[in-house]
Image (cartoon, rainbow over all chains, first blue to last red; front, top):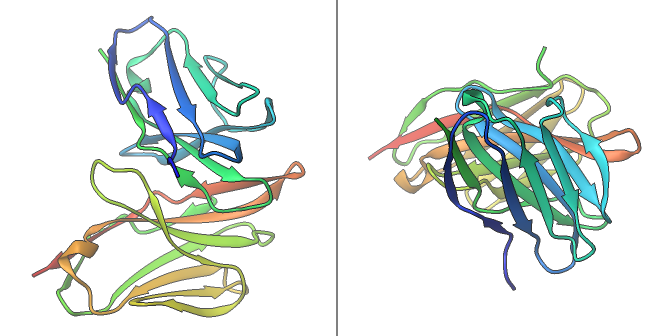
Length: 112
Length: 113
């Protein structure tokens, strides 16, 4: 059974650019959550998607957005990148009715 | 006040000793509690979940929950160098009709051979 797949694994961008990250959940997992992890702040919740609908959102500016497709794959987008957006972005999925998150390997974003 | 608080460490213990990791949470309506382990450069992986007051044991790991004190702990017996990692406490509660999981910032554990 394939795990949670995140692409790309590493990327470097410059300030002002935008970036799109992708997450493919475990087969059967319809809930996809995104987290930002930085050394100082730990894991910060960005948003959660279920059945193509955002049902929870963290305290991040509108530059951070996401969506989910009918096959449960999810993307998150960050526009107008800032240096402080440099972080590990983690996707976590779970099956309907379950409460245990399974994480992908993450996408490490560096903003120069 | 942070929703989930952990001492960042590092917590250093000698090989074979018991490592004790602690976590407090602020919201009394929190329902489920988890410990994740994260090795450097890797993603978090679940090692324990606990839902009711008391102790839950799984091999060398014991999770303890005290809802009255809003306190969760993880004990690692016979600590091994391979246990060296950051341990994240996570708390689940209902938020707006849906479940929300909040993580602490993690405690770094170093097991000294």
